[in-house]
Length: 411
Length: 158
Image: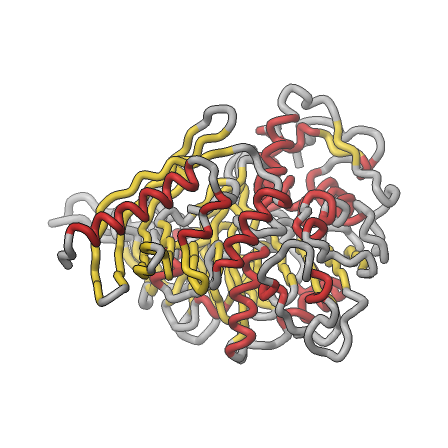
């Protein structure tokens, strides 16, 4: 492993050098050490490709990937790059490719395991041209990712060293993921793409930053919806890169509607409170849970609004954020309506999330020319242990802990 | 379908008022262009085609539109910006008694405070227009945007 492009400042995980968001060389190292390193990236929900031959194109970091359902029901993920001249093979966002993937450039055809099946004019025409005798189809397949599934979500890895997915997520965070997705059959209710003008890590940090929630997102406080009686906490994995924060409304009782919420809203400016009609779906009174898996996957539960977020780098200073809104196959009509209405809270136009679309861009613009300076991540101390306080940046420090380890930034 | 000139002008006038209300930053007047039990929805063409219900915004009554305006004014934080709507290809597909269904195209340019100008969104309006005593109002305005990818965030209505 080459040395990092610059040194980490003193202060450990409580200081983050701004260069980490702007440095092109560092960005290149992330491709190898993070995204092709011993980690897992979310690819799609298994339910998005139900039938044999169904495929979806996505990215592992910046590497284009095609995820495809095999005839035997399993799922493969292949680097979406032809082994011949490097063209994209699958061109659509999603579709059905039958039993093979064929590159349109020179019609090289691959089976769904990525094996090269045939090369047009391999023997030339009338003994002229064609591939050399020794050309071995077996050596020229599509590059295959490791694939594992959990809770109906498909993850891929380009690294032989990555621990099994379950171990990468860990028992602590895996349990929080189970809590929301369980073993229920997922249903995709919508997808949205949001383009951010900032480094991908600024968005990931934002999702881990429980400190900003009530300060930047003033929707709840403006309409007097966030009760100070709410309790909560943060779970952080040992290495630090995975987290789950949650808040629970103390008023939740009766295992049903959020008692008291309506009266909390009345008289404070919201004319229609139907977006807060919610069910205590998981039976524990937790109203918000935000979960992340290193490096770039987020699972959100805001009341009954469940969404996956995939944070995709697009060069060092731009990011595409892909949202997948979920419900379950067994949702009743009322639940479907609640999920639909509550989606107004989140996404690119969401009452409590639109700010997250611009704040990273403000950082990216503000740090230009200040690459030698550092940001301060000291709320709640210097460690990244789980805590019952959300007035903490512990999970942000946890992210940097795991990141620094993989990138070779000495402690 | 061909409707009488007066009806068509009334529809076009509603569209123009809608555009100017937003573009002139008179958002408080925007909900009044809708019926009380209206539907206002912003959804990508991709989700629309796949019949996936969740898009960017889903309001099923006028009070929700008023709440969105209040939130944009009082609660949400976003960089100063404005829109310029370009409307075209108005096609009345159904007209019966006091109701019309209309499809039209739009482009919305977003202008940021620093002058950066972006073709922010383009797509179709799928409208159900109700002719009331107070004039034509949107009973439904479904904004189906073609551009899949939303730059930064969507604050102001399309």
